[in-house]
Length: 506
Image 1 (cartoon, one colour):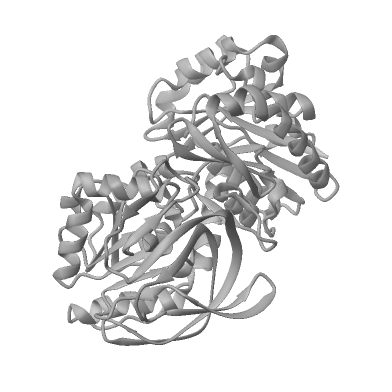
Image 2 (cartoon, helix red, strand yellow):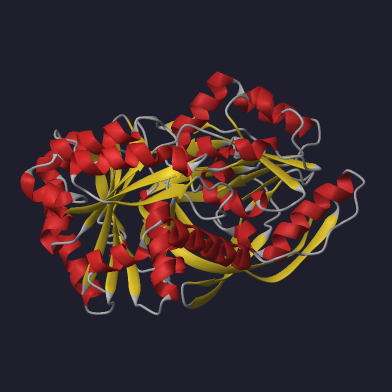
């Protein structure tokens, strides 16, 4: 089996997106390529067909490689819960919450055994593994117990590309400094350098490239231009800062997502952002919700803490005032739980709080359980209305990731019926809607990826504003495939692919 590993001078330099690019390039070239990341720290996750949880970035990479995602592509997932602690998910199942010191000083090397098992399964199925690192390999305080960077490269004897983000500034110093902090064996594994997110005239960069190659004795394989509006799933909420430019878009509909401190699965709204008549913003202050036609409460890894912070920073009262003014509010997963009367945490699953008062827009109480629900679902939506428009969708798809059990304190309209969980048929009510129809919630992630349903919600908002409805446009799945191809073509053009193939041994 062949390998290529992408490591970075720091977090958020573009490792995930360039790994995605290589997955698509080699898939286009007819090579059986699969992605791999030993350990991912992210609140953006997905559920595989067999009900296992893994990082969203590896989902996108698998899609780019033409593959059904499998948990072996991301055997360890860390989901930060706050206070320097994370929920540890091993091979798709949670094994408990651990502090940073507990994990790095005791558990990570045990988790490496699962990493090796996952690698063995992938090695028997594919010809090439495109491996993503995490953070920087030069974090000397973490190196002894690191299982995602150089330990993987050494274990597989994998050639490594070192990536720097020139848009941040200091890219040359980051590359030189990172190499300097590696030991001799690690430096020998670095087979090429990549400068990412470049804007401007590349000819002006040539003296810097010449200097870099002379200084490090490493080849600069490519200078990748800055790409925006890619329509490809992002790894974690730090990438929301990159979406600010998109918020300047002129469009008749403004949708606002409340950007809570522990926001998770914000990719639930990516399909909406790509619609021509939508301007999607991630609001960090209550004032940014002014003028919104619809407000979303997203998922959260610490729902009770986010709810308390929303009450302190004014978001809670702002949301209720917008609701009273006739603005619809939609909650997904943790956001759905927030819309209820109360959230109880008797086992302190998320925090030290026994119970937290909800926003009171839906007649329900949620109690956190010890076990997590992770399942792909199919659902139908009928016999309910949104802004006067009747819903009728016989088959929708999505997935659930939650630890809460919701019970209702009064009769409620349930907008969805789950008809299949994994491969088993069922008939389970999901979600709730207020009597006036303005507050709506569901446990189903990915619901807006369904093209007809997404356009139904948007057209209801359009008609409320006196605008004519629009037909369903290009499917979200087709948009993503087009984005993968655009990314691949850009990287093919900017990178010396012949040298890269020689480095890999193809």
